Image (cartoon, rainbow, N blue to C red):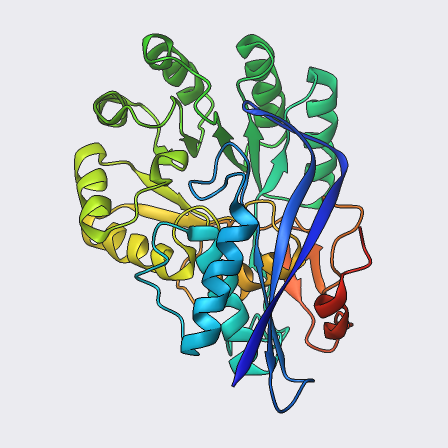
Length: 354
C-alpha cells in the first residue's frame, strides 16, 4: 500500500527560451511521490509539468485538481487512465510515478538505453532569438555533432529565417533540417512559405498554422511540397474516436507526441497505434519537463521501434534541474545506470533546488 505526496518546484531557465507564443523564463512543475506505507524507502516519482497557455489541463486550480486525483489513486491503489484522459499532464505524472514505484529503479523499462549500452538519437534545437543569436546556436549544435537540427521559426522576419536555413544547408548539406512554426503563419501566406522552404530540402514543418483549423490544415497537408507534422493540433483530443477522426480528416505526414500534452504515455501509445494504421510517421519529444519527466519519456521512447531523431534534448535548459545521469553526447541522449541519482527523500519534503 502506498501514499501519495506532491512537491512543487519552480524550474529556472539558464537563458530565456523563445517560441512564437512568447518567452519562457521559469516553469512551475509538481513532483508526484508515491511512498510505501511499510517501507518508506520504497518510493516512486513522476512529474506533472503543464505549460501555461498550451496544456489543456492547466489552470488556476491546477494544484487543487492534481491533489484531488492523487487522493483518488491513493484510495483505490490503482490508476484509472480513463478518468484522467482530459488531464494529460496529471496522468503522465501519476503513471510515471507508478512505473518508478513498481520497478524500484530509475531504469523504468529494460532496454539497451536503460542499461547504458545505446543512446537515443535526438535533434538539436535552435530557440527563437535574434538572427545572430539563432545563428550562433546553430553553429554550436553543428560543432557538437548534431546531424538533425530543428529551428523554431515565426518570431523574426521570414527572410532572416530563410537566410539562416540557407547558411546551415550550404555548410552542412548532409544534415536533416526541421522547422517548427508553432502556428505562426496564416492560412493565406502558408502556401508560399512552404514552397520556399521546400527548396531547402526541409525534413518537415511542425504546425504551420494555429491549431483548430482542421479544414485549413487538411488542405495544407494535401498540397504541401514538404511534409507537415501536427503538434498543438493534438492537444485536447482525448478519446480514441476523436483521435481517429482528426488524423483521417487532416492526414498529416507526421505527428509529434509529447506525453505531458498529448495524453500521457497511455494516450501517446494510442496515437502511435492509429498513426501506424494510417501510414503516418511520428516521433517523441519532451515538453520542457525537468530530468524527472525527461527520464520517463526517454525510457519509454527507448522501448519503441522508431529510428527518427527524437526531441529529447531539453535536460540542459535549467539552472536548478533535478540531477539524473542523463547526458547528451554528440547527437545522442545517454542514460548511465551507474551514475548519481537524486535523494528521493528530498522529493518528499521539498527539492531544495528552488
